[in-house]
Image (tube, rainbow, N blue to C red):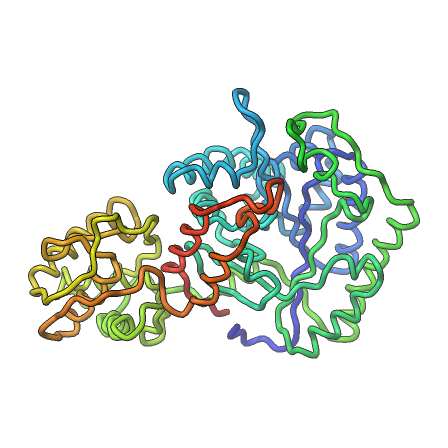
Length: 464
């Protein structure tokens, strides 16, 4: 990860989502106090409806207790969206049916309420989204970025439980080794902590759901899952509660895990917001030498590039190489993050062949720059020398021109970045719903899979 710190750090996070049972508020208060007494600042990802639940019950004691911790976001309604004219549906279904632009506009409109309610209640707008139910569609990341969320915690679904911090879909995605909450409830988490310490992990997530301290049955399972018409307003069915002594034991085991971590391993506790603040920032401009280094890299392999000390995603390399070709006198080239293709090239795009002139490449770069400037994305296809080509073909041709190579012959280039073959194969073969694991398992999600794969144009490792 590239951190200068030594030793292990732990992020303690809570998917804080049960807005059906007032007892979930009581145990949440006890959790906050257990951690605050030990000097641990945890991450509480609240659902918007949960924040309204706390507010409407007048639980200002809980607002005060939560304010000692980092407030994160966990969607407005745990991704169930009621509509007066349609049956309630999960966001995954709607995103799958929409174009990129339609999905992001709809998500921004529907999620703005929850973020506004959290900001009103706690006086600060969250910057971190704790992923719900496997929601990994990049349209969701893009919508939250537009709403001011900068961190996507738990990472895209297939990065789950790995040590990974990266930029993907222009969000800082943080996926970490996980100590399962069930081990804490059973008093076995210290042993798992020893395991990750022995593996020399330097940043770990311990994740919980406050509702699991009072019930082994999910609140959503009782009210939402596989229901043809799930309730969107109270009264709700309450999950069967655990005996009070079991709740107390789980709370005690949480405190004991924190104590054990500090005493045995000298652990420090951190948060997703702190990780974001420590992440190395990109410069606003690149030198021409850095752009030329990126051009050499993409000439060899279509992937993220180490450009003389700055790591660029393939999309960033595309934008920089295009800009540098159009302004040969400029010594500084802007580093533009918000660029990504959103669809495959059309059916009229054929395999490139033959040579092209420098002027033909410049004309194609002008067209690509218009798309970047107007839409903030890599074009899905570009007209080059009278034929439509995928953006990677133009990138290689423009890189060759920038480096002074001649003649420039068009060559086939991959639609997806190289180096992700195994990851893309997993996405292609995955039979589960990639955006939300319920309620319709094994539902085809071809549009979501395509969007996930194309967004690897925006991927690059991050370092602290």
